[in-house]
Image (cartoon, rainbow, N blue to C red; front, side, top):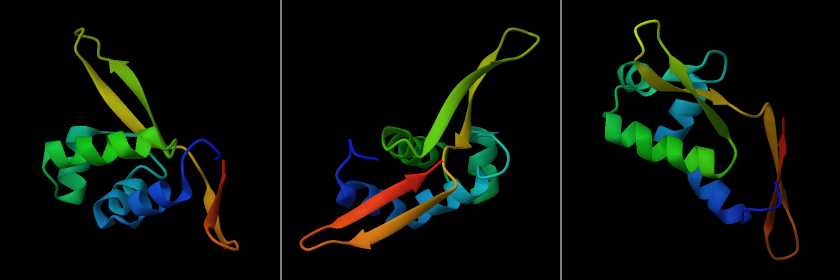
Length: 97
């Protein structure tokens, strides 16, 4: 990844709710409302976790416009796997897309 400190990504991925959201958007993109229902979380919790996942490049979002002009964000997992290595004084994370 490079831009983000490894410990911040590990802290984000260490959060159980963030992991549940990642699993939910792994195959099919979903809206925050769909995620809240599927993962049994409040909408604010979904938005906070998704913001952190987006900040670390682990999830992407796109705006979907419906036929009636309404719009919403749809979230999708942005990686296939990660490798965590232990260096001399730190962890290194490789994110495979």
